[in-house]
Length: 370
Image 1 (cartoon, helix red, strand yellow):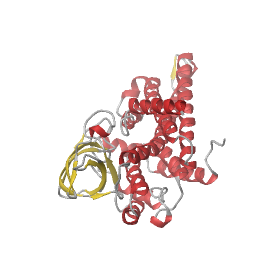
Image 2 (cartoon, rainbow, N blue to C red):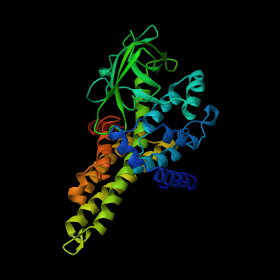
Image 3 (cartoon, rainbow, N blue to C red):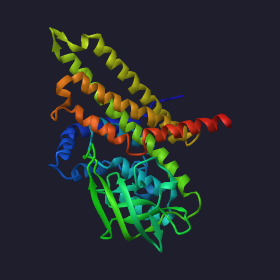
Image 4 (cartoon, rainbow, N blue to C red):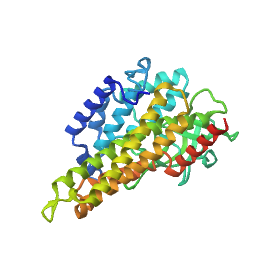
């Protein structure tokens, strides 16, 4: 079993790393956190120009057809660089349209996503708690949406959303909706404001039902979350690796009592444990990518495994990087606090760790019974 990306995908990853390093994304994220900068439109447009945003979109809908391999390596570099862009949310919205939309909907929406003309997101949550169809109360009736969604990832800068609603019959329906004057957006402060979240109020907002209808809408949505979980796992792996690199470099150069602090066994063991966690998360993410590429096997189990291990690795790596840096690690000037913020924000962005653990256990039980 080959757990390496193709040469073409690795070349895209190298390009992404060089580009994002030149753009000094950590300083851009710090500026966004301090309220000194609006969403980085310029950076987003440059990424669009490279064709990264349309990687998963077929050429017939305006994408470049590079596929999931390219998407995974780009996500990893975004995580490594801390780029403050609505990458994951936009990909998830496009993925749902690609998998569930009608031919007309795909032809209209996907080219706009690929070209960067519009940014999308998924409006799913209505309150804190696990992802569940029972928690959906927002109404879709007579072609209009009424209700509240919060938090909506990147909802403060998105142009449209796939809104998960409930119709008069009580069925779950995904609805495509522009953010017009009937939508009230309130920015929600979070631990990582470089990825602006929002509370959305829909007051008779016009919306178009996604797809041709049917009873499998929730199952299709969950399947889309599985695919998005793999992409997000790569972003978290990239962030975790960056944290480890920061800690190792500091441990080599920071001297105490006449020698580098990395010479102390306590630091060595700490960073060795982080290395194991990061490599485990990377392996699990690669298994998830293999499921995406082959569309065979149990993607749900692979995605849940990747998501859980990536959450744990990124939080662990960011925490231990702060500890390795000592007192300076907690300061505003240090990059370590930026990664810690991003790690905790991503851990909640697509369902919590406990939700994905439940998905993993359920999937393993079903596999055993089969």
